[in-house]
View 1 (cartoon, rainbow, N blue to C red):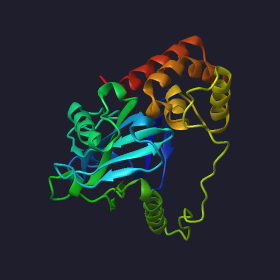
View 2: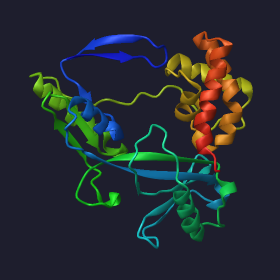
View 3: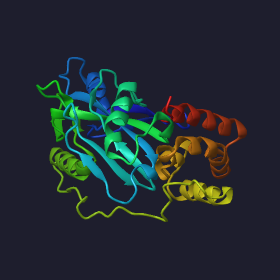
View 4: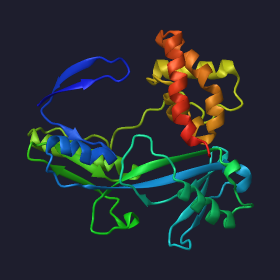
Length: 292
């Protein structure tokens, strides 16, 4: 098989060849299947879940709580996380799949209204330090209620021999990989099997989840460490994925973004225009993590 890819960071385009193509694109699974066959059968029923992050004072201690059944039958939880409390979640069917899903007003209100009964005090919009949404690639079933659809993964092979793996969840990602790699080996008549059950996840020097309270010098050192050793390429990479500052407190992340951009530019040999673009891009993303 042959196709083209574009590096979104550099703009360079490449031609690639492969013996097997694997579609592992989560909620975008059907979009890729449509490129392979416009008449394909839809596999995914996307569902949105959101989280709200508040200060520790709303649930002192280190114990999480779960409310197994709210007024409308949903499950809620409050979990201590890096000196904050994560509140969640929702299960909202969505029609449009986007790269940056945004918490809906009714989802925010649902969590604030119901979780307040179990915390030391009722959280308000002004107490939200960060909020974020994710989309679940639920395997389509007959039920119209997404909470009832399967969280198990599904592997299919199209008429063009493209392999699609979809569904599943974070806790089963290695099993999903193992099943897919072993299927590829079978198709290629290879004796190689997936080694994930023996493979350890390497961890370099740990990066703190929060950079709040660190000096500018300490933050700069961390940024350069992740750029040199963990392929950190953008401000969002550092503030959302190397650390968790955007998820813990979006306002703090916004405040630190110029410092992070400058430190990254120093390592990556970027100019002032790149720095400003990075700051602007991050601001556009982080705005959606703030309560409105």
